[in-house]
Image (cartoon, rainbow, N blue to C red; front, side, top):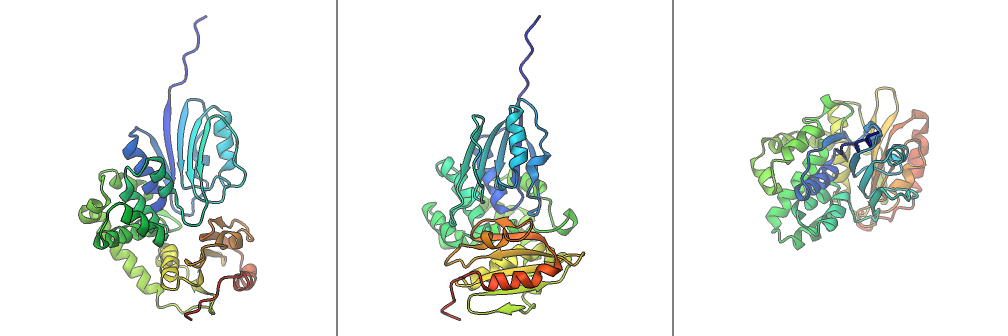
Length: 332
């Protein structure tokens, strides 16, 4: 009897659809081009790895998705014989030990997935790592990376603007909320080796920047529901603009008051609340720990959130946010 033919290799890339996930994948594929199926989605779609059917012959790259939240799907892939390269900076729990898993995980506060890929590639496409870091609101690490890349202040400003715009586009509850599905946005990124050229020449940049400015301006008219020297909480209504601006507004507040923590809550149609939480930029710790106290919460130490906080839990969230031990703002 003839020996069975080995399974053909099939490549799949799975990434978060925000600035960090897209820029991390773009760096990897600029360095290692391959024809791969792309699975990505909006920021809220954390369990993307479950969309990959476990079978032999798969080579899967996963970027900027919580390993802890994708653990069952990851183990199915590994047990089926897939090879997995995993880059991430979120809380991971215990790392699986498997010969077909290469995991590059670092959830230090000043690191994002784009920076991990930058290290892996020895800075080959560092400008895109700068965009990813700015998009994740890692302002000081992004500027340090930009300086190492020889970027002047004007170029840094453009990449910061681009990172914020790409990140803004990932927020929404459905494809109709955003200007571009992250898959379509990644295909646009693929045309450019230099993000400064993307910023200057890609029409999508103009669309994103204009929409982001408009949505931020609307959010700025909302007064905080809670505020003291350590932090502030804002509640936004359920509307397309609030679904899009949730993370961008949280990042804007964090940059404006780096000594304070912030939570931006958005009402959902069923009366529950979605949230983006930011620890103080000057002490980026505790956001994930706070959010993990609530069902479905998670993230990283500097930035975290949850999808559906029941209305009966709202008062508890306010209390736990206020008592989270954030460093007081001496400038307040």
